[in-house]
Image 1: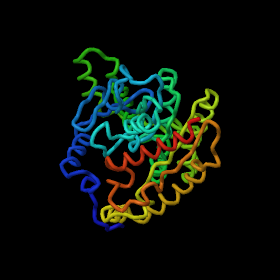
Image 2: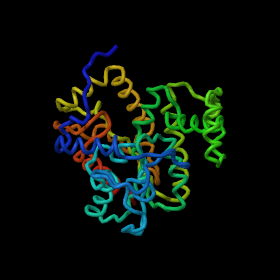
Image 3: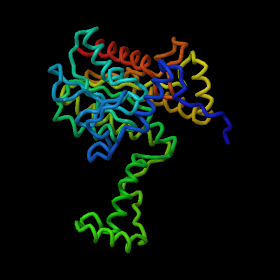
Image 4: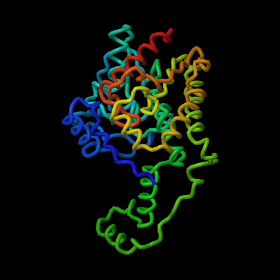
Length: 339
């Protein structure tokens, strides 16, 4: 069993101050409300305004879609890094910074709409894309992910997660009790009292999977499914797709004291797994040899190699400075490949 001392991400000196770090923590972990979503798995509850996080009318950490600035839309897909976990405000998240850099450096005027969400894997990303495409009519797609698929495989999970199970189990419990369609309050109470101890129904894996692959292929298959659909669809529609592998603390060459301690806390097993899987991902999905006219691939695994100060707050997430660097690199990459 690993005996390494616990390292708290909110103590990272990547944050501007401890006060800001704790405010981000309170907003993320104590105040932000997240609810099930019928198309994308889950979303933040709409219209939340916290000190470091603002959620629009659609449940997105994005500007209101009612008053977009430009004529052309771009959508950002990904998990919590794309969403901006660790940023001190919406304005410091990748979507906002990317829109800013595209405009100020290159006069590329896109509304960068943040469709990413915390814990989204490739499964939720593809569902998000399908449900949003015809309404938003994006002229550019940025996929910025990788970590969550790899985390799924490390935890021996495929496609489903605790939230899906919780929602399904709650419905099965309510169906067992017989309260979902019952409108009489007193009958609801009676049904809960008299049927509470009935045996719960359980869903087998066949409810979620037609075929469950070997665990060593979980991450690859989830990512491949997403990439196959989005790249082929966008090629047909003549839409540029920028497929980008997110950075990882394990790959940073000049780690700060905090980053070295956090890597040690993560442990050798996870370190070796993450290093191996990310290199496999990089070679398979993010090699420029796989570029086409409509999909361009880039890895940002080593994007912080020249920086010795603390960038990361944990293995995957950064604070404001890290998101600024990431966003500028993505904007540079887009400019070089947009035509």
